Length: 170
Image (tube, rainbow, N blue to C red; front, top):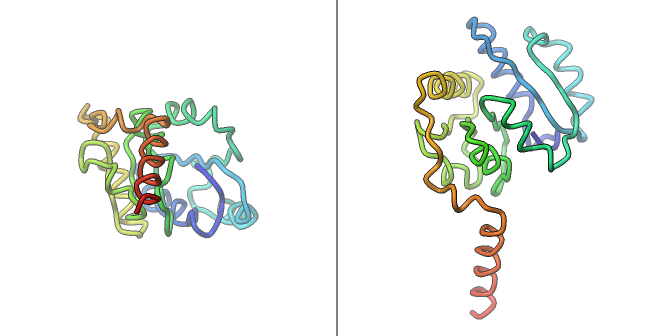
C-alpha cells in the first residue's frame, strides 16, 4: 500500500507470496499504489508462478485506506528503508497484524507475537512472518496494540509539534 518504487521493494512482496504459494499456503497478495516501478511490477506479476493470487488495484485515495485494510487480513511491508511509515499505524488502527522488514520505527510500534512481526529482508523470513500472523488471527491471539491512543493523527501531530518547539528553544 503506497508508492510503487525501489524503496518499497515490491519484488520482495511478490517473492514472499511465491514462497508461500510454493509451500501450498493459501495466501493472496493485493498491491495498492502507483509509481515509477509500475511497469516493472506488471512484468513481474505476468512472470510470477503465483500470478493468479496477485491483485494490483492501483492508487487508493487516502480516505479509502481504512476500509481497504479492514478487507484484508495482514499488512506486509517489504520496504528497503522508511522513516515512520503511516501505513503501519493505519493497519494497527484497523486491528490488522503487520509483517515488516526492519525499517524506520516499525519495531517501536509492533508488539512481537501480538500485533505483528519484524523479519529479515528475505522472502523466506517474511513468509514465516506471514504464517505467524495468520496463526495470530486463526487462533484469536491478535490483540489491539497497547499504543492505540498514540495512533490518533491529531495526537501524533501534536507530539511532533511539541518536539519541534523543544528543539527550537535549544
